[in-house]
Image (cartoon, rainbow, N blue to C red; front, side, top):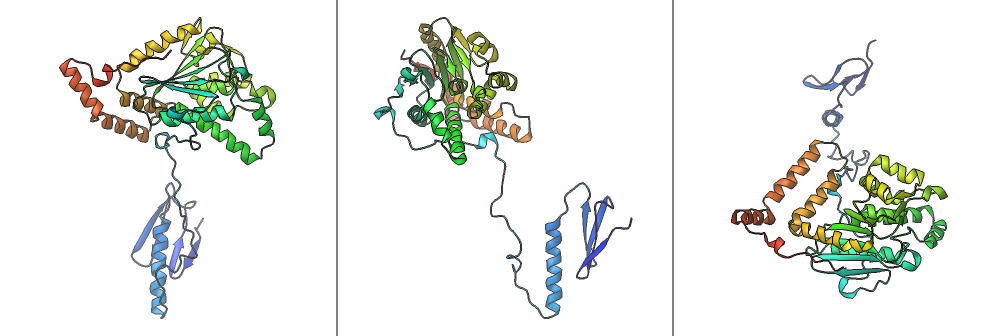
Length: 372
């Protein structure tokens, strides 16, 4: 078939990709622009050339068109949408903190600091540590301070009572039923941001499950870097049994145990035993009694003491940013940039000096001491 020809002024446009592998758009006698079938046409350049041609023709007719006279007729986007990489998204607080370690006033969560270590304790044993607004505010306030404390190397998440955490407070479910769609979505996003805020702490986090965990409680443990649980503990996410979806905890559980185990946990509402949870990767270590937690924490403290604080924090961040991502040029550039930056850092210099002098680096001289 013969391709159609349209005209704009004295410039015929011979179009187009369905008719030929390459189409030549001729403007006047000398200007030629190639449009490939597989590639994107350079329409911006073409439009600019056409506008210049029209301006010259109008000028010959005695009509002078000012620069930018078409601005009101063309849509120009004000913002450019760029897909951000995971390492470009920084975790941030949900709200203004209401407590700090120096003046802690939250009764639902206790927050204690020691030498190089901090303890966040869920303290609502009378409700099996079900999460209410006060408890979420306490976890948030502790995280807010810990993100700014370079002297703290390890964070321990623990609980009082028989259960680690029974999930969301039943009263909050009643409140959710009366929410609008926008309010409900905002509430879920706040919970997801809180879990991400905790998961992104620069310190190495340890979850101690002295009892069973349900729903969001399982999500809190999944957000920890390591979890030690008693053999009698059980773990269940049962929202699907009441017609709901555990959307807020899906990202942290999936990143912890993988898609296959995550679907088993959340789609079947199976009551997972502690040994099975360890097999899945949700739990790192099992003990017979919670009295053995102190020995487990002490062992990790001894190991972390020997590691450079900033190097350890950046290694954790690197793992989170590259997990389950395809190997792309952007990823290679990011990891290479991190290595180049750390290599010339103060800790790397001190580490090499210590190796050559056959001494311990400065950070290894101050032991991390558990409080319990």
